[in-house]
Length: 81
Image (cartoon, rainbow, N blue to C red; front, side):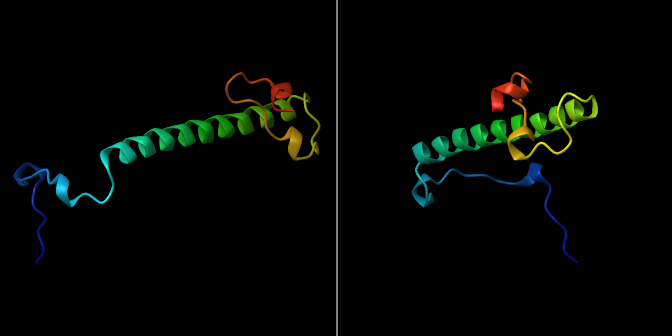
């Protein structure tokens, strides 16, 4: 029967000589992933805002892709055009 060890009983040891990626590259990529995540959240928020604007009659129902999104940062539909 497999029983996982509790995290409190783990022994962790830093072994920088076994790293595949340098710390500098790792930190750079973490920053890049955060930027991508922020953009993705802004786009998703923009899609929601555009849908609400269409429901309120502020945007045409069939407006094409260029009118699908609004800016997730400032909520201005004109900002994305």
